[in-house]
Image (cartoon, rainbow, N blue to C red; front, side, top):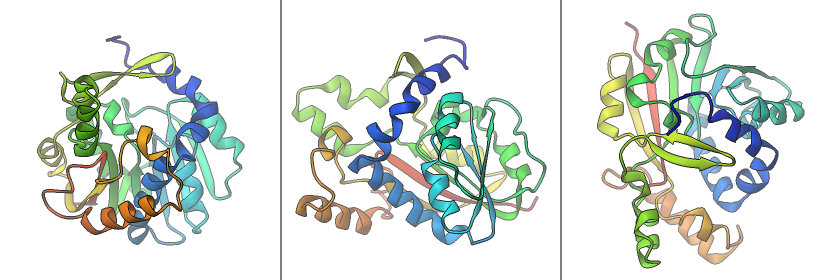
Length: 264
């Protein structure tokens, strides 16, 4: 693995022009974003100011800005931010910075902070900027994290059926796991829930844990279906029903953590 923690951003720069087409606008990408926006909506109110960490091409920022929410997007990929700015999203601003350094915002600036689709998986769990997140949130503000899960049960089962154990158990290797993103190798950590809760408990209370998703197959399979197919509708209905159940909520592709800032 390349020891330069910033070199992998070149992979996201190269990916940026095709990212929305190859992921955001696919069926699997839309399902993940729908679950995240539905989960997040109760915690962000019109007129509030929120921060999107690892905003990418600003698909999530665009959604929240459309709900009369002011949003600041932060990403370390110049390529992703170029695409984000080209969308001319009213009420949104963007800054280039990294999760590996002190966050460039004043204390108690934001009503809520979120990170979607695994930006925090690119940071070792013990180095998540927990104290910084607490600092920039207003009292009782919300922190919403969507991270790639270590155990995606359906991915394991489907790739075992295809006699591909290396893909089935790819998240279980020594951490971090090297993941190819365009022309670069990205170090990715798949943390256990207990480690995350331990790291955050001094600064945040855990309110909810939600799978994202559980019974929706990996993209290589899901993207073969249409959004209106009977199979898609049935799987989404089942997923909506079980995604918050203890014992199930940690078996999805991603997991969403809803945290509230402690007043300490």
